[in-house]
Length: 457
Image 1 (tube, rainbow, N blue to C red):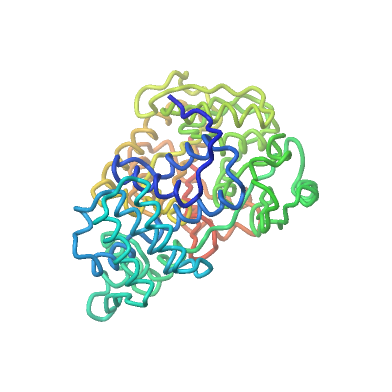
Image 2: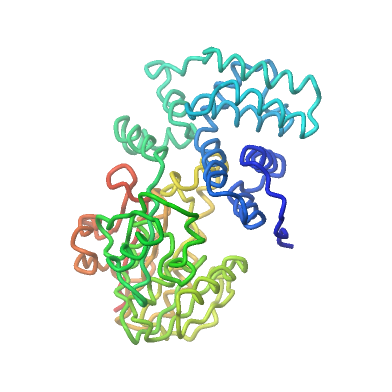
């Protein structure tokens, strides 16, 4: 049951503590809890909302490094701490070490008040204050030595799991690994995609200025804008409510162009999620033709339906389906299939930092079989001469190139289609000589998206 809207609005720090502790205690996604909280407290002032996002995302972004430091300051093992106590320490330490505009005395005072208000014992409150006081006084443990243990040093200094650092060192070498880790910790740009069914980038930019928002054209995507200054909560802007734009990274915008979607096509999108690529495909189709969007998560389908209604979409059907099994479509009935495959998400760590502590190395092996099964199920639905676009937001070859190679080996009637002219001219370099599309936060300040277009003979 959805949380009801509350008229009693908490302060950002109190809400951040509750969300972080709840995620730790229940093993839930802090981003899901954050989204639910923002829906529950629609009257949260803009500055408090911004602080809440900064605190929650900041703690998750730097959690591995925070825990390394706290473990060396606290006598009690972190795993044995009460979830509220651990969340209090992480939240306080993040503010002390990363938010220099917050006075240390305010951080200490607020941490103590919140701990007491949440029912922690006097001993626990004293313990929290003692640890944070040491940090505030400059007692910050040294980071691991790079020469002595490169994996541990890079893991802690850049706050990424050791297993991922180890994989990247083996694949990319030390310099590129360090660059990729650093890029994942930079705050990503606030990027939107214009609804070209209703307006264009220049007209929307002019409209946004009138709404107190500054922005600029994106470097690569013609439908994209980067918002550089906000005078109000973005989702409260009239232009958003009128369906003139939605949030979407530039890399995600570009990969849809590889589909070659055009007016009049019969298109199926498998794994449509909340409808970001769905709306873009409709624009490329000029809202003409037929688009069937499928997903296994009913909640995401509900959000997709809301986005499509706001977008002014026509001739779209949403369908709940498990794409790893037989799909309710006729053989050879589609001109275009887009498979937005479930993946590890390692290309979007800068936007979703909690992946760094939720994902385990063993989880990586679970994705390729599902991805290949989705391709196998989709292949028969495509007519000869049609195109199948495979998309992920991961950097793992096992989820990208290797999945495509396995599919092509079993399906000689398909071949990789490399058509750089489908991409906007500034973005054609993202299509490598092998015909694969790949973006990266480290090299282009875009989220890491992978795409492969396959033609059926």
